[in-house]
Image 1: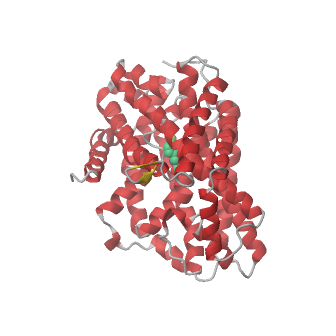
Image 2: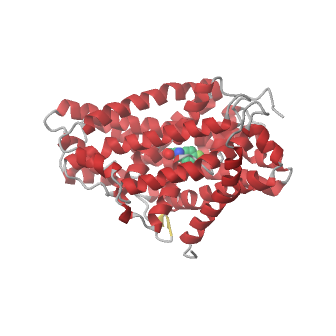
Length: 453
Ligand code: PFF
């Protein structure tokens, strides 16, 4: 059942750090804080936690089961387990979705790189209008943001083309602890600012009047995006797990790390924002427009500390993005490498080339070429919408049906219990969630999204 020649991760720590690296990304340090800010803070976070626990973890385990049992790329994995081509569409959709997300994600990751260097060179110093102008001028230039996105894709390419152990695992073992240390330093600096308590309260004191169906949907979408669910990424990584890996425990650990980093990101941003009286609901521009100002004002008495924090912050953002971009890149690299019989380098070059084209088009669509839009949304926003709101939930929905109902139960039991060597105490709970709770909840979101429910 297992292909012994295939690459795999070398250690349990490597598995957890690489998979958590995929989960921890701009979704945690950029999307989560602005969503929480927009949706009322603590109430949103509680719903988010419920989504991770009841839908996210069973969804992750299901992708792990498909990946580890088939030990092949995502597209072939679904065909191999079901012996039927139509089910393979889930895998193909995952490969496609991964490349699209990587394309627009690289644009924001490129912005982080630009801001990292700009903060080193002290170009982010100035009043509110200056910072706003800085972002507008930078993001609308035809060349610079696109070049940063392409540069980011090449860094990703470099790591992925070095393989699973020497590339992805080794990079994750360095990047994840660095990211964590940077995060803790900024959280401490932010939480000790005068007036920071109000920000902490915003994050932890729920106001249940804020819960609406839309907040629920946002929490669910965020949980999918943040856990990298539905894109075949977890399935691809699990194809490199070894037989001893406890799938349930790994899913819980990755979900815990991911959630902890998201909450810490909130603790890094809101106390600083509240301490200078900035509203936390400024949306996606929070990181690139609001925060440079917040750092300047909050640390105005200690400019050197402000400088260091700002540099660290953008380094953290770029690192978080990189641990995720390598995982998205790997989904398609494994596919081209195995399906077209190319070398790993060759497969990875195709992915980089395709994603560079998507990234340049996305970058232009939010800047220099405003005509690149569909139904009133820029190409970048349209791709974000179709992937996060349609393809990821759909991929996860179909995977739950696939694992819960289609494949023989003995395969599910075999993988969940590592061939009977684990007790599998929660197997029944898992099966119930994956058969009923997850598909019903995801179907409800879809219906609501299209105005039917
Ligand atoms: N989980 C990543 C984040 O939170 O930023 C985003 C992501 C990574 C989505 C990998 C999909 C994926 F395949």
